[in-house]
Length: 183
Image (cartoon, rainbow, N blue to C red; front, side, top):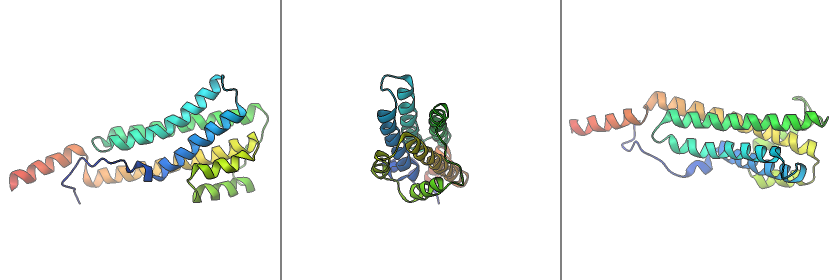
């Protein structure tokens, strides 16, 4: 069903699961970097900025969806790419220090995946991280990043389906103009 108001932009991006999870990724990354990485290193800045970019591009992509599904989807993909970069930073951290990355079938991975699937509040994950070592916190972050990327992908799919059924801004404006002429 087409809306009579094609420009429907609001600030409800806070309700998006991918946004909520991206806040947790940003917060845990800041927490991790503050605890385990030299504040003056390029790595500190890169990781925090990649986490921030993931979160902020969801917001910007959401805002752009009102007038350009294409631009909105591009920005959501930028968010996913930023999180991919961040994931690689965590993997590098573990690898170069000889720390263990959780296997996909490990008990830790299973438990964290379950927690990540049921919680989006970043404070919840920060409280867990405060009592864990760098290896555990990096792995926790990797799980949250993977879940965030998956949620962004699902959101992109939903936006694409919506575009296929309702069209974009131009199509909606044309429909409104034609309906006005017809009346």
